[in-house]
Image (cartoon, rainbow over the protein chains, first blue to last red):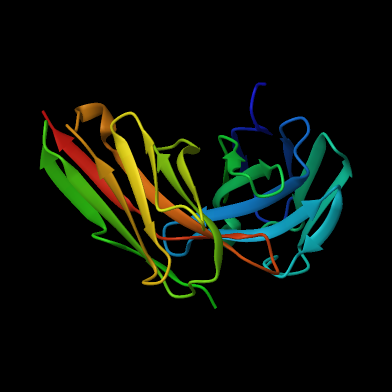
Length: 112
Length: 113
């Protein structure tokens, strides 16, 4: 398996623009997580899905953030409109019933 | 609310030394604990996973222990090498409720040749 695949690796956008981050989990994994990493706050969970259904989105900072998982092999995290304080590294991870978590390489987002 | 603390925040050792990284957590009701490695600008690589019923796990030069009752885990690295230089993060998974991992801020390890 190629692991958890995220795209793009880097994204630079202007404030106010829409940003879409993508994730392909490991085949067969039933949990998918979106995390955000910043120097100040470390790694924080934004949202997670179980069998494509959002279970806990309490970490989503505000309504500008939304996430979808239309099928077992694809998820998106969208920010609209983007703001400079959204600049961070966004990680996707997947797991098979909590038997260890596998992380993607992350998307480094810079909002100018 | 679960809190995970890693001390020290940074550690520098000469090559060949054995070292221990510490992780403590406030809520002992955990399902498992996982140690990760993160290289600069990279993602997280899983090193070891310890279930709540286990006391330790070993992989090569790495050994992780878990003392759930005291809320502590250690990662022991034997015969350190410059290639071990990275940030090491521990994360705990709650026993019940949300399946999220709660991470410590990490220990940045530098192994000096």
